[in-house]
Amino acid sequence: MVGAAVWGIATGLLLPRAAYRLAVEADQPWAPACPAGHPVRGWLGPARCASCGTGRPYGPGYGAAVAAAAACAALAAVVGAHPELVVWLLLVPVGIVLARVDLKVFRLPDVLTLPALAGTAGLLGVVALLPSHEGSWTRALIAGAVLGAAYFVLFFINPAGMGFGDVKLAPTMGLALGWYGWGTVFVGTMLGFGLGAVLGLFLIATRRADRKTPIPFGPFILAGTLAALLLT
Image (cartoon, rainbow, N blue to C red; front, top):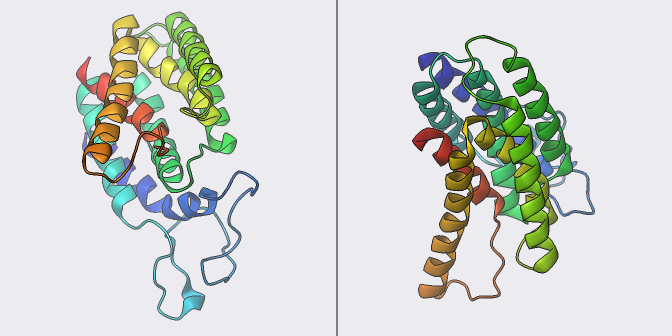
């Protein structure tokens, strides 16, 4: 568990710059400069601009490291010494960047969602060959396809209520949830929708939003998946 927490801290410290650079509108590939216009080079590391004089941060700070450490330590404590833990630990930093970007600009960039899907499917296939794994690769693949199809139907019915980035994120979460069983798929999916509904109702009740106010759903998909992996 300590090793997982260290991994979370180490990767979390590398995420802020990538999270800032990817938090752009859909017609832009990435942010080339800090808010003051100074060029940003590289993708990993803190989001600080030395050219601004004070080196003040222009993106997320240490919150990503704290979140990654907490998530990785919790997963290690629950999953234990099984090889699929490596896959979950690799997904944590990707999920944190996706959540941050979605919260900022309401999008989940393909440059993260699509490699995450292919990488998770492939790595779980390798894990399935190891004797100490606890899960089913076949069921994970089916669950990924089912969850992706379900989100696509929801998007088709109400495109204003769900982004297509959510549709492309769902199969990866389906792979993780399906690895452990259909009950986990159900719990993770319902938790995602439930958390989103609770926040929406809270914002409406406090008059910070109305029924037409857009709410990024990606963080709730990710949170629901993490909670289901920890609880079930």
